[in-house]
Image 1 (cartoon, rainbow, N blue to C red):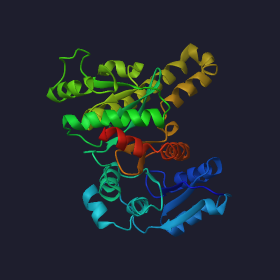
Image 2: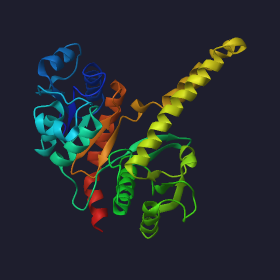
Image 3: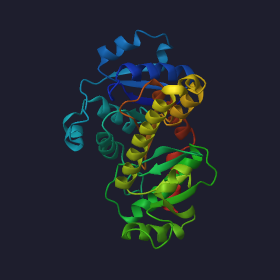
Image 4: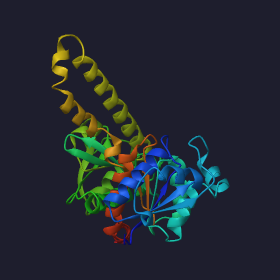
Length: 331
């Protein structure tokens, strides 16, 4: 298999590693023209790979003896564990041996490690974590969804610009709309940060539609929702928790009493609804603003997330997204 795209993937990150990660990698190399550098404890990874049939030249195992846990302080962990699967993978990207790095490991460690090792695009103050949030229209790109809890106005302006490029080049959105997360739609609503950002986005060349009230986000009020990481992560976690609770309530209601007979007929649409809220279908969230692509998968992800993440990475690389972000920021 000949391919110019090489992706490094952390085999040891996440709750279901290495089984689900390896399974997803094998599925991905069968579907897409990509070479994967699978980073982790060599003996464990090779044992998992031995269960599958695939083109051997499409996957290389890169040994890394250490693993960064989710309970470790990010800065200290990346400093002390240079031979961790995460740091080895990020170093492969830094050394241009891979064009992207994907991990389901510690969110904080990936962010700090990516920023320190891969580096920021010139002109970018803070990379942002961009997450696809399910809506009635499909999904909206939410950023920042947790990387930067304290932000300055120019950070959010940069998030909006980077999100617009990513949405257009990778997600296929034409002239994506940008909404500023707020407690109301009126221009005068919000704290000082939001008010300053509103003025900046209003003067920009982006397709800015104004404030996006939180209650309207699930309806798909804007293609891109911009906010600081504290607000973004709150929106994300509430959405995840609420969707799980609603699905549990609905399932409980249609499987009891006289509704049991209808439950079988509703199995397919119920499955479709559940699938629309499944983070594995999106794959992962990119840290936008770094010199190369770094993606974070959900900690509990399974093999479909790996496959979809690899697909997104290929789109990101083939569309030269970093160069387009750099150009827009410098204009």
